[in-house]
Image (cartoon, rainbow, N blue to C red):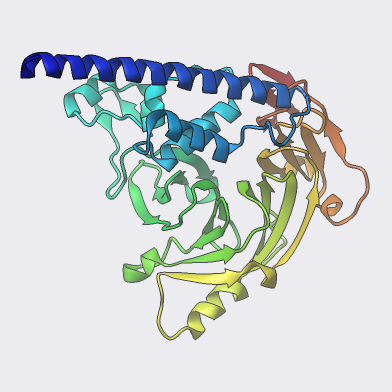
Length: 359
């Protein structure tokens, strides 16, 4: 066998091996999606048989080798958990993203753009990273600002003309899961999976990268919102949802940040604050991940939704977080991953995978 034939043989062998790996990978995805559907249907899965992220990542490494990256597999696994009925492509496990500019332009569509000004113009943020996604967008009507937070930690403030005013990179090992605006403290709050970030976006110069980190947290934080109560001065209440089914309320004040910063001789890029020093309460309202939480001033209550099919949506006053009295809750067939309040119609619209409900 000459060198040319040997090269063709090796190439054919590699192709056959990769095809076999794809077959094994598809079996793993089918098995995992089937299990996630059973979990949503309330079917008990023994712990030893449950495919959690660690087992999934280990199996993917055994199939494709060590070339797969943890963050790409983690993103694929989350997509699989959030929507088991979605279409999956094997190349997603490698975080495939075309870097060819002409190819990128031809493939670009509305769902790939952060802000679509026209078919010929994109807003490019200085310092932004490729293969990143916007995790949260918050409108601040009173200041005519828009805040975005990307999954990998880029928080940006835009004005009404969609021009980036300021931004910071949160150098945390965990992903950003949500953000909101602290109306009384005039700062931006964001959550990663294990920390609360408070950023003074108005700071100038080198202080622009300065932010506070509140940790540790008992569970993985999945969503955040601020309680807009105008009678509170120099303090804000923050509502957090986590993967343990808990709704947490944290109270932060100007003393927690402003005075501590003034007493610090040298301003560091980050300052870590102990979560135990903050006033907080929590209550377990769901038996699954809390996917979204919002405070509704018109109803004087908060709402939290979960993939839990028994306790899918809870609408209750903040007082219920501090006692053990029953709460107002609604059950959806397959849980709820989002909801919104329509003020004019005075209804709440909530939805799950492939359906919606009006309350």
